Length: 366
Image (cartoon, rainbow, N blue to C red; front, side, top):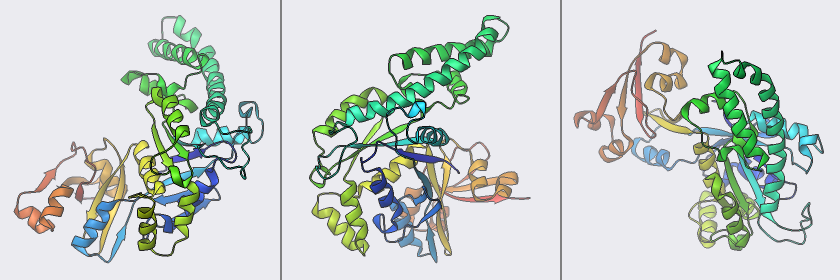
């Protein structure tokens, strides 16, 4: 689907370690694949326990999970908005992504130098926020100049609405606020899509901690949670160095034992991949058969023909109907035939909104 999450952070916060964990197939499951499209872009499999359940029921020839793209963006330094360091490249790369994974250092280690001399994740967050806000303010100011005359003429209603939104954005940025904190109407959401603003992008904050803080966090993590509360953003606690050690273990069983030993049910990396998938507003439907059980990605809110188009464009063009079984019904009844007999197979038309977990079979004619 081409949607990407970009990993950002200051130097030496564990960003690259985390990306390397994501890029190691063994870190996730027995057979989650990983490939590199570019040196800094990974196509990462989304962990989904439902695939394992369907595999146990159907015993297909193969199981195919769905994926999400993660981009390792060049490290930022203070002054990036003015071109310092790799600033221009950094900001351009963020603009191309659909969501941000912001890594913050929440551990002490005298052997790893912090770019600012001390560990303070809230300060680090503010450094990056400031650079992104400065860039957004430049964008907003330029757009205000462009639409102000049209809006004030009274002849262009759309320009007036855009100007009102831009003025609200400018006020927020001048206060040092990220634009994702600004509440929008449905009409304003459509206008916002034209602007491609950096601090409007949804964000996941990843607190990189030491192993001892992987389960319960620490004071640094609590400070981050407090600092981002107004954004309504998700905060994950991950011990990246520990995750890299897990990735070195040979078998899935060994990795699970390691996690249990430190009090975790699931690796932090697996949690992060799921969170990235969700923040991109992506959902999963399944196709199930003796040859293949496969997970397919669709956008939340997609109708049946759009979901069919994910498999092949011809499916969408010639869509007739969708045969839908709810995941829970399939798991309880163990087969399509049993679901059909029990009246649990629904026949849905073009207006059906696909739900996460639906097991689908499409009828089409081209």
